[in-house]
Length: 280
Image (cartoon, rainbow, N blue to C red; front, side, top):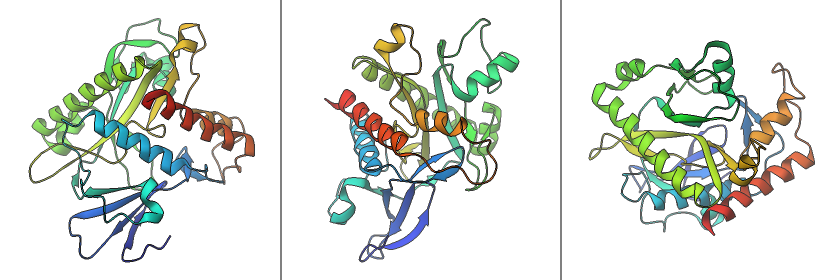
């Protein structure tokens, strides 16, 4: 996509970055409608996804106004054609760690627990089932691999090696604190925040600054609390449906199959319903 006066500098799996010569230290973060799963970008895109996730990120950033973040208050430079899907942000020195917090046992954590009784090397009580709430949320960081490679779960000691003991502790404390606050906000609205991942960078003023997307349906698992309490676990408002659909039809080799119309429409509807649940 071409934007007048802006230079495209990078594209990730689902977001595109632009810079402008007269705005040093600023980046336009544009959320596309692309959807990814298992480290692959899938076809077709999810209509309206970029705008929905940007709206949700902005809503969550506003809930944590006391936490330093990368948003730029002056939004006037954002081009009108991408205003609903863009955030103008400050450049940061990004920490090479994905700060994952898990409040419930699910996904890759459940697979590891079945094999070893641990999640990312952290020992958990025996007898837990898929979808169980953990005794307390756990910080399970990952190393952010270059695009095209798989992120790697790492120990807290490895985080210390990457960023230093002081910053590592700040990352853990900030992640667990934001997760706890967000979980309470979501639960009051009938939503379970099962897990999420945060990204942080450093600025001249702060060693830990909340960045990228935050608490979106792409970076989190959100479940229907009423369904969960009734014994139906995993009724979700995130992209788990895409993962499940793909896993049932693809062995992970070659090119992923094209998403059918039903899963595309269902995913768009789930994303929209979550926003209405949280922000109404």
